Length: 136
Image (cartoon, rainbow, N blue to C red; front, top):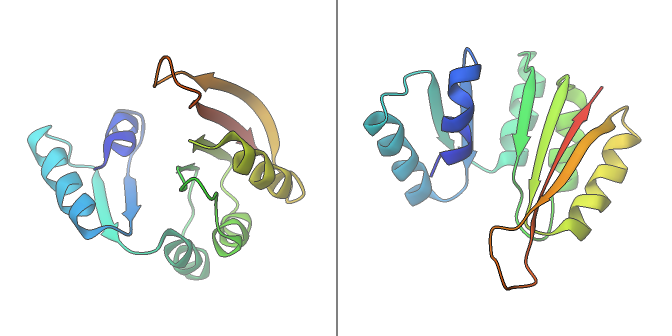
């Protein structure tokens, strides 16, 4: 619904949000409009496919904030990310195990972990969100 991108929008010239779920994209567009955020665009696409298109187009991206499903990121997305080669990657995860797996792949592509932390968004459960900053 665009929350992460909207939070980042006041620190960026341009923000692009990509989501496979059409209803989530519609909600994100509405949320941005209601919050007066004009430097953000949302696309209803597979994030891996979208990253491949951006990488192939030669567009430059400074930061990628990724929030994959519990299963982690796809190989296609991680490969496109390494081709796109943003200076920073913020990885948000609801599954620290798949996050570690993906980060190991990104470190082989030249990224280094700069900072990581757990965020207890669901007190009194075993679930935890994890956030990691990687940079080239």
